[in-house]
Length: 304
Image 1: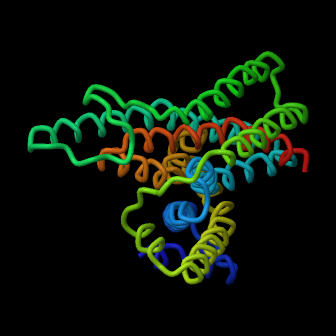
Image 2: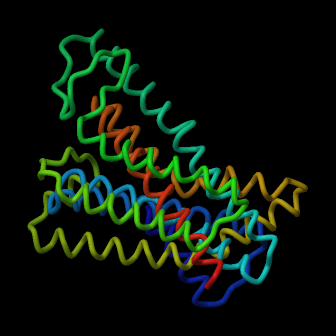
């Protein structure tokens, strides 16, 4: 199903077919969502071969690649079309607001409701995460890493509104923080992953076939993202103008929702299965990636 939705984007770009903005928004937006699912499945399956915390960090990084592609396109285009700078800012702030304002709350509520429903039906199934009351999600001690780096990035982010710009030195600091974050997560001990669905079936394959399948999924999904990012972004703006909708609002709300929907779904599935800590941890890692690597990459794309 994901391939059926994603492949037309590649074919249309290779043939040079130009679609109406409204149709481009649907076709290429659906391709972005499908590619994000492929990336999420492959990243989860890769947890079998790398450390747990690093795998979650990589999962979050890879799952937001569609968001990166769209936002970096806006920033790159802003170098020659100044109005696109506002779209880059809108997409970035919209994606962060989606994860913090909606994602964390969604995972917590799903976890609490599911835990109470299980308690009402009898003994709770043993969870892979720490045991927590049905009134909250109790995070793992390892989540201090994400919370610590997110705190540092948020403190530095105060510089941006004070200087009224994103500059090359912001990129140095924020991307440097991302590098430190990835190094720190790589020091964590390896743990058995808690997988479900497509990622679980991939992880069950023999090592050689599993790694080949994961690499193939990464490559295909990356190709789809590269093919769909530009027409999807332009389709958003054109659709807004055609229907009299503020294109700034469309870029801020619809684009992040499309590119980060799979990540929200993965985190929600963890919460439904009684692993709220992993669900919130996935979104925490994604937020660190966006506040460091994504925001830091925007001025570099603009300068390029």
